[in-house]
Length: 273
Image 1 (cartoon, helix red, strand yellow):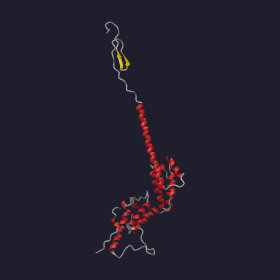
Image 2 (cartoon, one colour):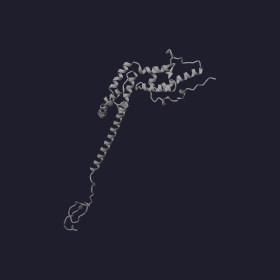
Image 3 (cartoon, one colour):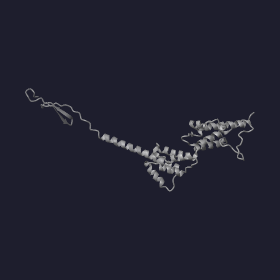
Image 4 (cartoon, helix red, strand yellow):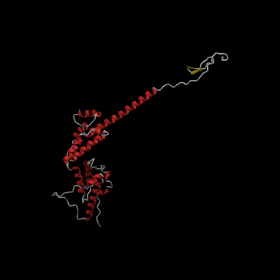
């Protein structure tokens, strides 16, 4: 009876629970994606399926053995690595790299080349994007900082490592007048903070400004409401006619009880009451 071997990679039912990033060619996070995969490939003992082992002479080890059970397990694991790789990339990227492949290592290499070929031209293009990034082009500070991080990762992919200081300096350079105070604070420090510390400070200042704007709007609303109430006219008093039998004319007289109506009928004969 063939020996049944257990492998830890067989216990993974959904790789997306472990790799939350969906790799896309337009919004590349290849460095982060590949780093997470290598961690899990190592943890589940399948790293050799993307980075083949070599013998002492530097030649790749044979991927098969004389044991048919182990050979079948290796091919099953290779198929699982295929599934993990293709299941965490966008459809556009999948269409670009999908080919009939004999090993997962070949697919991994082709995917790697997609993000790392033509390094010089890609580095020049990405540098221009990185150096011209501005807060005004984004809806909030979080999106602005995220774009700086993404561009820095893309530059690392093509061999142009972006230092933490450079990221912070670009963050400061792209701020608008609303955050001059934060930029001035950073530049006056003896040592620049890390990018994540600078990002946290910037987001905190953004939150403070939003709360301040809300409070100012509420104050203006309360002031406008108070002014409207104060400008409302006093209640109009009602008028009621009062007949004055000793008068020859009809008039309204204003007293504390309202308007008095006086009706005069003249003083001729037969008109005196």
